[in-house]
Image (cartoon, rainbow, N blue to C red; front, side, top):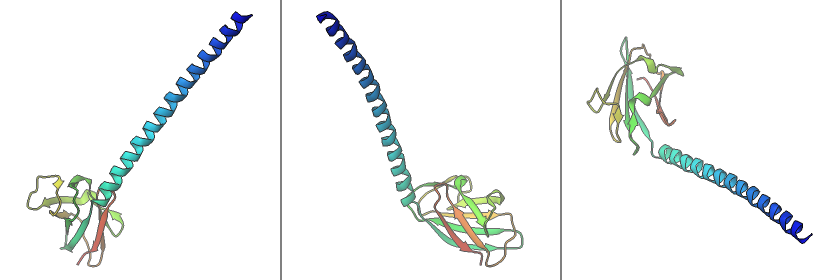
Length: 144
């Protein structure tokens, strides 16, 4: 009888160890996932806090709208990540030319650089222009 009690205790103890191991692995995986998401959230918040745009002006002629914006934050931005709205209508596809501080070939928009955009669309004085970068920060102005 003493041997069966020891054997059953060993089986129960082994089962407890297996269950505890599975629980520890699950807890560790959950904690790691939470830490990774918190780190990614901090990176997004930091990126957003360091992004700032200054709407310099917007003008028009009979066939185009011209927009000038300065990257006044400390983040490097991509011109290809910009969205343009005119009175709430997305017109990003109508950008025909861009110029970053004199360069027409770069996609990089560094801090303190001015971006000049030309849109192949008609505009009227007083229309609202909104410019949004890929992290959601934006600026707005009106056509003068």
